[in-house]
Image (tube, rainbow, N blue to C red; front, side):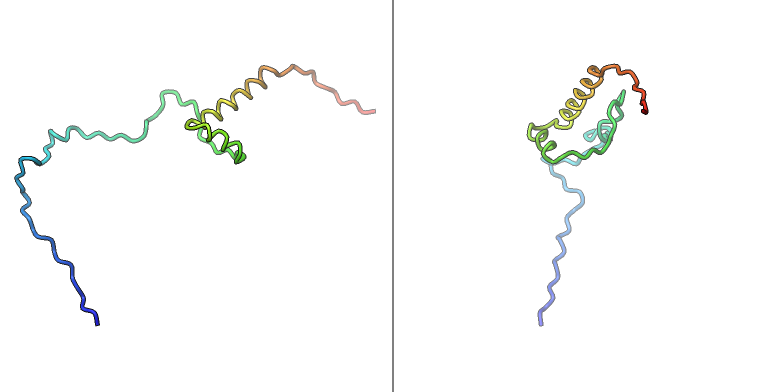
Length: 99
């Protein structure tokens, strides 16, 4: 049969320890309370949070170039959109003729 051992209680010390090398903090030392969470609202939000499924090799290519891969993907998509918008030819509507 094992004897149960109990943890020793820590020695009680005085709540007020006067150490000149480590003085107690005062409200003046701490200053005003600053609460900061995230970067806050944007002046003109231009991006929309979405979820896109990409092939693994495509994502790996952009990630292998370092930080900022999402911005590079956005730039590549923007170039494709611009190319399609600027290169689009005006087409006349084709009428379907049945024989």
